[in-house]
Image 1: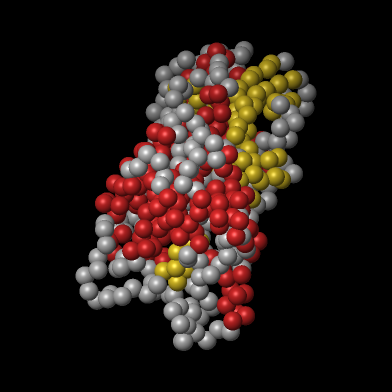
Image 2: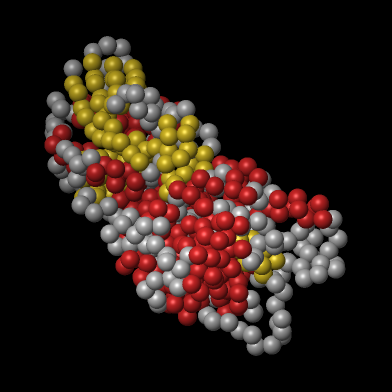
Length: 518
């Protein structure tokens, strides 16, 4: 009888738990049992591991092999357990062999990779959150497929060993010279995984006129506020939204790891540049499902567009064309900055602190602007169109701007460039970060209402109180208006919001939106 142990990680969302993989070899008819709540992909590890070990020249015990995954009550998913299962069997089978294996090589170590039938190691998604979870549990070394090594090395305090094959692992376990192996061909991305969008070279100066809308975009970028742009087709709503990521400052090291962890789970990282340093941008089509936008799906809940846009921008162009259930599913992430997906297999949490931008025409034909003389829609059709955006959703949108047709498009009404506006946004965010240095918040949009009424009370808030008494603002809307007032104060370089900042914040919330009530 022989026993071998190795470690792997089970992921649920961006959280992970260390799993002990035990291989027990006992006398009896040859067989292979894998226990511990494996899913279908992990159950197939029996065949992958057997073929990989045999094709790598490792001995395969002609005995009864039982592999246990502990804790047994925790569901385990995916092919990332392959390497740990193979290592546990190698340790159990090689203790009496010559040369013997040395279990201490894997002490306090994690193994994470998929095995090919030829014994080569293949990369898996979710390496960054898995290694981060293992590091918190005391793991000090990780063995991963070579294409995942750069991603795993982003976690500080962990020694990363990138391997190309089972043969290399076998040499390490026996303390023999590691054989040279040909590198694995560039891995193919899973269908539908996409990639992390590269920073856009679109400049804000491309937008002609629209000074009010440009100002609203600047305020939204400076404070992380949700924005609603409504106007006729061709007025520049989409152009403005697409240029907002360029206004955001680069991600801090902590933010970069948060964003990279989500994209690692989604399989969208570039192996050559695994760390996401720029704020991401997502613009799903209006036919997207709730699972695609918010996250979910059968089996393991996957992150949706709102999580893939974490610390960046999520644009819902032609917002009324989205399913009402999709739009209303965004209400909770907008409020908490987190998506909680509960399934039979467990509850996954994904970060979702993004800047939401809604863009819409004023009516189905889009011509209900000004006097609306060219509009062919009935009053009922107009109400129904914007009525698809529910009141509770719009109550969570801080800025509402009506984008009117630009005047003098043929003239030289060129606005400021992205670089100029981005510099002001960086300064405003730096002031907010200094103010909230001893708190968990980073932008004005994250500050709870109780803090706005206490520690950072706005003395000149009578206009907001009057709007609440009139019914123009809800209490949530009042808090969000005060957050915008702080952002306007930061952009102006003042220490405290003035009455003009509060009035301007009220105007940005109540004046636009094509008559949609606050």
